Length: 549
Image (cartoon, rainbow, N blue to C red; front, side, top):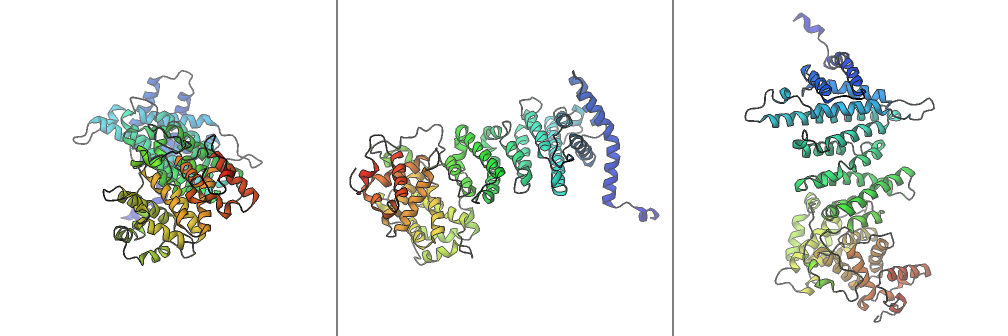
């Protein structure tokens, strides 16, 4: 055809469509601002405006509806000053009025879907309510996507002008309005939370470091995090777990340095406050996801890790670890397994290690496989494959616990078992740095009373008593002590393990050279020991000979 040579390229056609949409939408935006600024705006006026948008096709789930959202989002953010600088180069205060107008408009579009829109036409066999819910979720998804695309565009093309406060205001307003109790939204409440969780995961700090503070405020928002955790059937828990893993993974790089910058320190404190809220109000979440969270919490963040490991179910009353002659193995709780919602074996499967590992755990053959294990757990540069080592420690312990609980197992079977063969071989073969990491993974299981805490406490104490290398004993002690010298809380299992180590003459703790190598070290051990002893117990000095208390 003759006109074919004059066809507009696709990209230019899209731009022209957006230009035409802007010409049509700007009068509507001005009309909405006038309505929004009325001191006594009525629901009828708002409903009439939304119906007019529907009549003109701006609520459709297609490119036409998408252009409407693109125009109003760009216009509101430009009017708010979200992408401008003062003459001195500083970022100006954001004008919230146009952002609030945008937020309210989008919320009304989602809430007040006209009846004719929801019912035109419903799919065969699909009730009108379901059609309305689908339209509402479609509007929400497009609104979130439009705001995110604008955020990405500004961050990538004009990072020096990027102002996270504007996006925080809009996201925060949507969170508050769309998660508040409302009959118009009750049917889609779980999907609303899921949509926000997916959006926040896409905006994680590793992708947008300059949005990190706003992002942390959003994922801990009172209309988001508690709502996720209180959703029926714990359906929101995996979403929050992924968001926290994203947070701690981002922090790892910055918290591994010796000197923290002021922004890093502020972000760390914010993350710690989130954990404090979870520890106080939702401890079961930390209990169930401790493995996944500890895997990404930076090794230097001992107090942060203690917050995760100190969590215990709210229906449990912790036995006092300072009780004289406490018999841990007689506590009914230590027979119960903890719930772990992370797939522990996934890293082992990915590394091609699970089948061989399970075969050795069941037969203790071939014994030569133990000598090859170290090489399978190390990178070419000599660093350990931490995620695989962490999974191996917990999986081996789980198999060992199952064996001990079988009818044929005797208590002393811990010392002569395939799991202990693996632990002892790794302690002997790994480099000091890798061994320290492995011992930390064992200590991560010292939590509230359960069969994992009891088993891994026995593992650490057995490794301490059976090794002939005092450097290993010193590392075990270091792992325990450095978790006790930080501020509380301290995990229950950590306390009972260290108390047993320093009080039981069998371990001859106070005769070890590393406890007396320097006056300041000696004072440190005695101070920690004193804080871990019940009032009225013998002072640490009385234990110095390794005799009875």
